Image 1 (cartoon, helix red, strand yellow):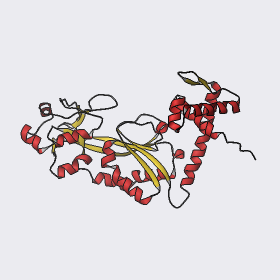
Image 2 (cartoon, rainbow, N blue to C red; image 1 turned 180 degrees about the horizontal axis):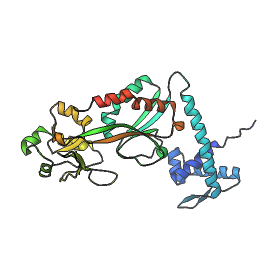
Image 3 (cartoon, rainbow, N blue to C red; image 1 turned 90 degrees about the vertical axis):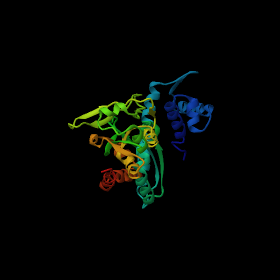
Image 4 (cartoon, helix red, strand yellow; image 1 turned 30 degrees about the vertical axis):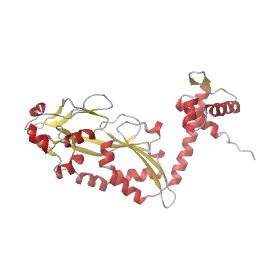
Length: 311
């Protein structure tokens, strides 16, 4: 009996070409050549009897028929993907793979212990962890989960808060010996502060403080030395005596305990920044993804996080 769907490979090539915008880019993504990609699309168009793509030397665009076929094809592939994800959880042991995107702060200081525990419980799940402050597109880039800081846009993704992480001001003992210890928020303007430039806006992130009357203040640090891309850089500079920085309690606590940093202006603490877990709606999740979400959002995980903050 002839195979009804022996052309599915050509359909995938077509969808990949649209996603990447050119035959050459699709060929790179698929590990083949542009001529192979072109022939696959031509075969598909001949099979369907319609033109799917308008091709010029410089651009590609979908025809109306191509747009309709692409939408229906993606829906069909999504159903297959859902079926495979559901079956991954049918056995006694979880299998499959997970791609996770996390910022450097969480990737180095919060997530490792939980991922190590998950790996011990589910050794057959392959985890690819991207530690970066870049905001990835989960759907377009193939990520299952992401952890993000701050207010979240309305993206159609599910968002579950992991914690409100308290902040503190710290400096090295050597810096405080040389420059003195700030006693008030106003004193900070006379100190070497270590600002962080937010990648998303190119602007300095304000320090979030609370004044003596309990009012919230967004204070803008100014300095000749600024850090961008990786916020952990301000902590490293502070350790070396370069100035005062604001960071999370969960980053500062060990350094304070070891005497490498000292908290200053403790009376200004009381504010925090939220971290949240993002993922696609539940029906698109694999069993492995659901298991990791349950672990990250479980009550005992929250208790462990809360217990590790500086008192």
